[in-house]
Amino acid sequence: MSIKGIEHINIDTALPDETIAFFTEVLGLVNRPDLRPDFGFPGAWLFLGEQAVVHLNFRDAQPASATGAFNHIAFEGTDFAAMKDTLDARGLDYKADERPEIQLKQIFVRDPNNVLVEINIRG
Image 1 (cartoon, rainbow, N blue to C red):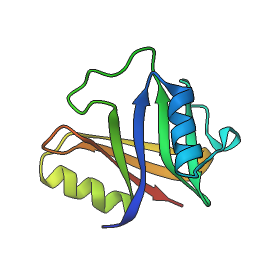
Image 2: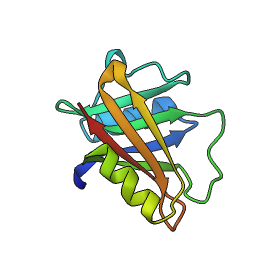
Image 3: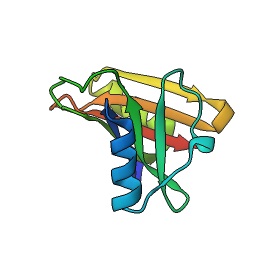
């Protein structure tokens, strides 16, 4: 098992227009609504080249969680089974998800600070 790099960050926002404008107009990212899968809730994916590096979740109110608007960080990983074995061996709670329609396996686990860590294995 290994981590190959940071894939994206995820932000919850009740200010979707302003947040999209900041990341597109100030930082030069590109909003590509045509490439965001239907997750059953509104949001946006903002791209740097071919990579959606900022994922936005649109909320009715600004979040009041321990991590504020920061929802999670996602890493690109390898070896889905080995990652699950590692988490099991440490007794960590996690959620594993498979999305065959986009050739993606995911693991969600919380770090000691309650930050959600997403590990994406493609293919």
